[in-house]
Image 1 (cartoon, one colour):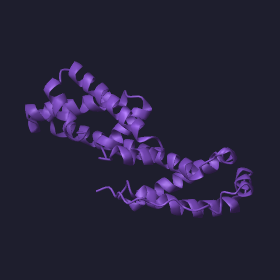
Image 2: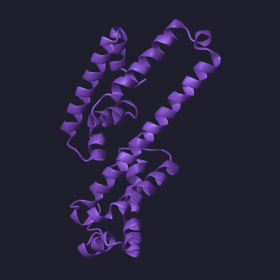
Image 3: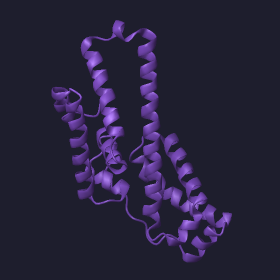
Image 4: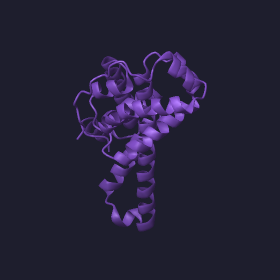
Length: 207
């Protein structure tokens, strides 16, 4: 179950001063280490609201700050440092979700090939597998922004307000993107011959 406790915004962070940020941009590793310690401690509870795996969270934090170090020349131009870091971490988190989803699909595909789908699956099961495949194809075809919102909502059960906070966008934008994404996926499912199943999918979680 996702946590909904509001995390208070920090007071003026000690490692965001112009001189410190410029030192990091110039390659000062000591300044970056202090910056990392401060912001990693803020990022960790943010990510734990969406992932129940502390190991995954630590991996995401490491990837986030590796990316920040590689693009440290951008730091002096960042206005809201915490929001910027959260956006980077959110993208990496979504990439992890994508990789996990692909891995599950590959395992299921191998299982079907190994045991013989016709032997272990009824006609209804086969139809649901076809529906799932078409859903994933439709989702993959969504524009990036809509795809992120869709997956956070349908796969993780996040509410629009939670998604808006995570992606640092207005709630109205999230609702509009989600509505458009659902409509696009539904239309593609109907066009593929999944009319009644498309309706049932709309009122259920992502298969």
